Length: 159
Ligand code: MG
Picture 1 (cartoon, rainbow, N blue to C red):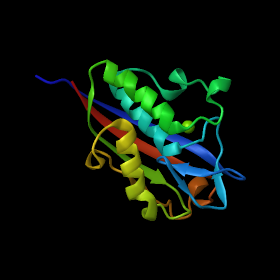
Picture 2: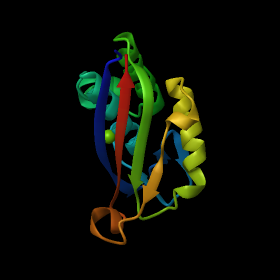
Picture 3: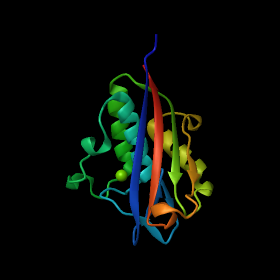
Picture 4: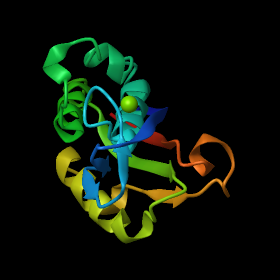
């Protein structure tokens, strides 16, 4: 009997001027970008927490502390690859990873396929195993006011 585990992740980063906007490993042209110790890839961080949670391996902050200067400006795709290697080392395979980006602006739709392709590449899975969806919050709350971007993810693992 295969063993299945589900995990979820959530992350938020503040939008500020003078930063690159990188979501799902894709750089998006915009007037503001996400602030964080690493490249602040909010979607990658939510996904990392989802699969670490499923494997019972804690969270991204435990693996890559934001007080560690080694991770200053870190490429979240590198962090994702390292975190995924920990999960794979425990014998887990990915069934699927699904996610939602919450952003008022810019439009995510033109970038979704590039994100799925990039994330699948980094995890060594098929793009069909990676779901990326996006929604606005209809102008409500910190997302609606364009103060930040949030992401939610869920992962299903099997071994
Ligand atoms: Mg984060």
